[in-house]
Length: 117
Image 1: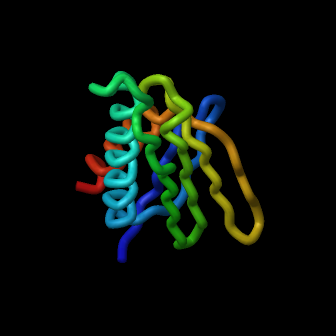
Image 2 (image 1 turned 90 degrees about the vertical axis):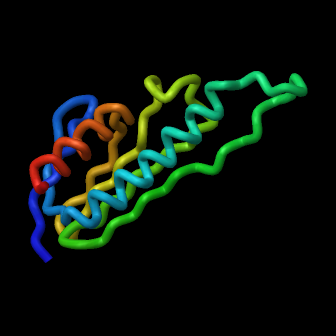
C-alpha cells in the first residue's frame, strides 16, 4: 500500500503526515457526510415551525504511521462555511490537537486526491 503525505492547513500553520489514497477517500466521504449534516442544520426552519432534528457528530479515525482523528458537532455551527473541526494527530513521540476550518480541510483532501490520481 503506497502512501503520500497529506498536508492539512490549520488556522495557524500546517501539519503533514503519511496518508494513503484509500484513507483519503474515506476521509472525503466523512467530510461529505458532515457537510450534509451542516446544511440540514443551516436550513433551520422546519415546516412545522419546530426545531430542526439534531444531527449526529462526525468522528473520523485513521490509524497508520500516525493516528488521525477529526471531530465536528454540526449542531453548533450556523453554516458549513463557519464550521471548524477538531483535529488530533499523534504517534509515539508527539501529539497535536488543534482546530481547522472545515472548508480548508476539504480543499486539502481534494488537493491530495488530485495529486495521487
